[in-house]
Image (cartoon, rainbow over all chains, first blue to last red; front, side):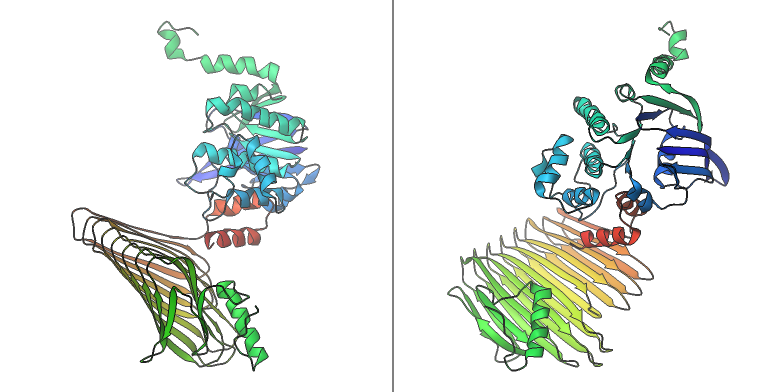
Length: 243
Length: 316
C-alpha cells in the first residue's frame, strides 16, 4: 500500500546539515504497522514524509502503486491518506463540529458528529459547539484528532504518537478504537508509538535508530527484545540492580 | 410582511432590501420597535408601549427611549445608502431605563456604483441606567464597483451607571473603503462592558479602531477583543486606551491575521491610576499559521479552501 524507496531527508542546524532519514526503504502492506525507536530516531519525520508534510531530498514514495513523491498534502489526503498530528493544531473560531464535518467531507448532522466523538470517549453534546482552541486540554484535543481520523475512514491512517497526553484510564479504550479502525473500517494503520500496549496489537513493528531501520519484523520477534533493551540501564546494574 | 423602503422606485427598493439582508439578516418588517433610514431620510418607524423613538428636531437623528424594566424587546435601526456622493451624518441617543434588558440591532450598508464618495458618520450615545442590560449589534458593509469610496465613521459614546452591562458586537466584513471607529466609555461601580469586534479589509482599504475606556467605578470591568484580517494592500490601526481609576479589571486584545502586503498596527495605552486596577493588553499579529493550513489540507482541502475556512472561522 505505502512504499518508501531509498528515502532520505536532512535538516540544517546552525549551518550544519543533519541527516534525519538515511536511505530508508520500507513497504507497508495492508495491516497494522507500528514504528518505534528512541527520541530523535526519525519516526515522526518518516510519518510526515508519507503525508507530504515534509518533502524528501531523495528517494520515492508510492501509494497503491502510484508515485506520490511530488503530490501535495491535499492530493495525498484525497487519494486516501489521513494523518493524526502528534500535537493537534488549534483554531480560533472553528468548532469541533466544523472540523469533524470537514474530516468527513460532508455536512454532518449533530448526531453523526456525536457518534464519532462518543467513540473516542467524549460526551459529544459538551463538545460539538466548542472551538478547537486553548480552552480544550491536551487530552481532549488528542481525542478529537482521533475522532477526525474515524470520520475520514481512509484506506491508510497515520497516527503520530496518539497516546501522548491521554490518561492511562482511557488508554485501553483508545487501543480498542485503533483496533476497530483496522478490523471494522478496514483501514491500514501506521502508528508511531512507544507504548507497549499499542505495539502489542501491531502486526508488524519497525524499529528506527538514527534515521535507519534497525529491525523489522512481527510483534513476536521484536517486542520481547525491545522490552529487555528498555530495562537495560548500566548504572542501575552496576549499583546491584537487576539487569 | 415584505419590507418596502421605496414604494416608487422598485430598483432602488431592491438595492435597499439586499443591503438590509447583508447587515441585519432582515427580509421582513421586524417585530418590535424600528427606525429605517435610507439615503439620509427616516423612511419607516415603529414604536412599542415600552420603546419610544423620537425624531430629533435640532439635528438629524433619533432618540430611542427605553422604559425601565423593559425585557425581551428589540430595536432595529439600520441605515442604507444607495446615492453616490451622499454624505450622511446622524446622531442617535439611546436612553436605557433601569433594569431594562434589550437588544439593539444597528448597521449601515452603502451601495455606491458611482464615482463620488459616499459617507455615513454616526454618533451614537448610550445612557445606561442602573442595572440596565444591552446587547448592541452593529454590522457595516459596502458594495458597488464605482470609483467613489464607501466610508463609514461610527462614534459610540457609552455612559454606564452602577451595575449596568453592555455587550457590543461590531462587524465590518466587506467593502468598506475607509473607516474610523471611535468607541468611548465611562463605567461606574460594577458596570461591565464587553466588546467583540471583527474587521476585514482588502484592496487599499483603511480601518482604524480606537477605544477609550475609563474604568471609574469600583469593580467595573471591560473585555475588548478585536479580531481582524488584513489582505492585499489594506491598512489597519488598533488603538486601545484603558484607564483604571478604581479597583477594576480591564483587558484588551488585538488579534490580527495579516496577508499579502497589508499592514496592521496595534497600540496599547493602559494606565493604572489605582493600586487595585488590573489591566492587560494583548496583541498578536501574524500570518495564518502554516500548521493550520497543513492540518486542513490533510483533511483533503486545497490550500485556498483551507485559507477560506480559517478566515471565516476567525471572523465568525
